[in-house]
Image (cartoon, rainbow, N blue to C red; front, top):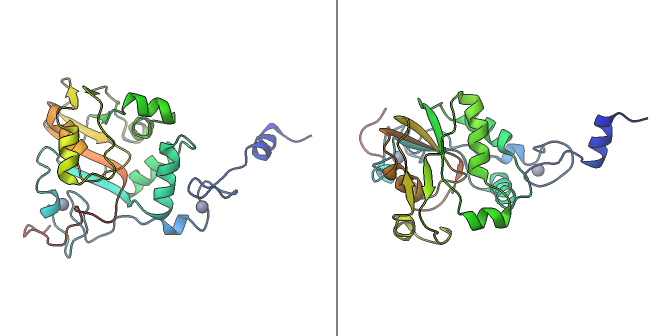
Length: 231
Ligand SMILES: [Zn+2]
Ligand SMILES: [Zn+2]
């Protein structure tokens, strides 16, 4: 007579969250292909730089954000994982939070806020990765998740828009209540910072730290020329 555990494993075999291969949550092929944002980089936004710097050209316009850091480049297994998560096929919040805790310093925050999902889209796909991620990060950091932000209107999907269009798309799209003075703003992907900056601009907090599992490895945020303030 098989145990309940072995029965569950038989019916629901453990699968790689990136490629779906049976075995482990992250298979031996996908695990080594996860690429963290490695030094030298900009401490404030994680952009690759020739030398370690405290800020760079890429993040100079993120005036509302204290820092904006992601754990991994959004490519290969990380891209597959987040795509499957957004489509509601898997819910790897615990794994993603553990990756972020491993790769990023803990920000000195009192609470976590979430970039709110567009209601229809969340209903359509059945998943809300930022909210799920925030719950797991709250356990690691021992802080509450606060309902600070809400959407005031729908927006077009940001995918495919350039940085200026992204900023225009989310302008006036968020409202915020009073909250703690130091907040982590959690999202699933960080692209140009338009959404995070707009949320941070609405939140009456003194410090806003954007944190996400991944960001695209190409595009306008890649900083090639560091500013002079090396750390
Ligand atoms: Zn795999
Ligand atoms: Zn930077």
